[in-house]
Length: 99
Image (cartoon, rainbow, N blue to C red; front, top):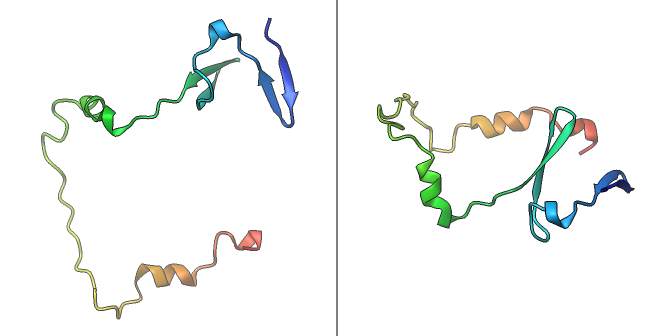
């Protein structure tokens, strides 16, 4: 029977080998489902999985095209302070932490 033990501020559960869902050191996802915990391996997709990723889109994805959004002309002269300078005038969200 598996037991729960404590390691620092975390709880530790040893999962019997016959119930293992991952091999060796692999990232897992833990989710609370009611009063149970669901443990799943994290699947890391790579460029080799591109066909699989594209297959997730429906056949009519973007069939109507994209919405057109009018964009205003940008000032590339460097004379406009822009959004960055406006943001620098605001207090930092980290200010309360002394950063």
